[in-house]
Every structure is written in C-alpha cells, then in structure tokens.
Amino acid sequence: MDSETFIYLLWGGLAIALIAAAITDIKSRHISNWLNLGIAVGAPVFWIASGLTFWPDMIGQIGLAAIILTIFAGLFAIGAMGGGDVKLLAALALWLHWLTFLELIVIMSIAGGLLSLLMMISKRIKKTEGPIKVPYGVAIAFSGLWTIWGIVGQSSQTIF
Image (tube, rainbow, N blue to C red; front, side, top):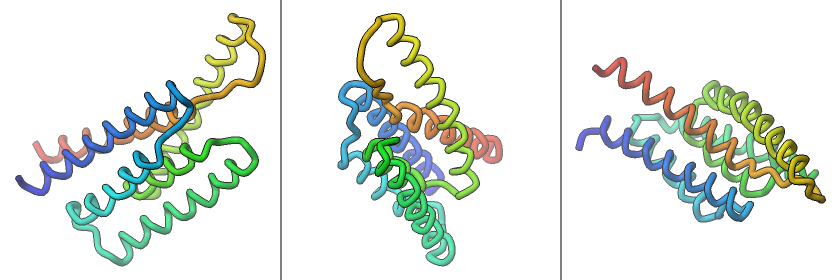
C-alpha cells in the first residue's frame, strides 16, 4: 500500500471515529475517553505518513492542541462545554493545520448554534422542563467531517 492510500485510510478512520462520537453523544451525552484517545493517537501516525517534520510541524500540532485544550477547558470550567467535547476538539487539533482548524471552529459554531436552536424549538413544542443539554459532539463531528471532506476533495483533484 502506498503512502497516499494509507493517508486516505487514516482520514476514513478519523471520519468513522467522529461519527461514533456524534452517535454516542446523542445517545448518552458522553464521548468516551477511549475514543478521544484513539483519535489523538492516530494523529502521529498521520504525521509520519504525511511526511511532517518534527520541528516545526509536529511540535506545532502539539502546541495547537495544547492551546485548544486550554481555551476550551476554560469553557468546561464555567459549564459551557462538556469534558468529552473539549478532549475531542483537542484531539482533532492534532490532525489539522491551524488555519484549517480555525475553519473547523467557525463551522462548528454555526452547526452548534443551529443545533441549539433546534433543541430549543423542540423543547418548546414538547413543553418540557429543565435545561437543554446540547450534544455538542454532533456539531464537532459535523464540522470535522465537513473539513475532512474538503481536504480529501482537494487532494483527489490534484492527484487525478
């Protein structure tokens, strides 16, 4: 198997993991630490297969993930995000260039806002009490899949 095919398989594995994260977040409002760890551990394999250099590429990815973890841990601390969501974002940051990750954050914010709005409407229609628990892993997974689709689509256009 050549390197390019292996990279596509890694992207596919990441996509499957994101779908699993969304499904489990919908069902239980919980994203497994093992799933987040698997996504994070897959990143160095991706780096090596992609030919990233230790400095500055790999260290930059680790730095980006640390920054994302710190920022979103603050949101977790004030109750604005779940811990699994924070870890999922940090694990995703290991896979993406910072500009691409910034695009992911914008898409995630829009998707999360729409998801929250739909849940508010649903709550009002059903006339249920209590706070809304938004499965934000769905918005994260959606934005991740959107981003992967864009990356793989660009790559296939330059390859063929």
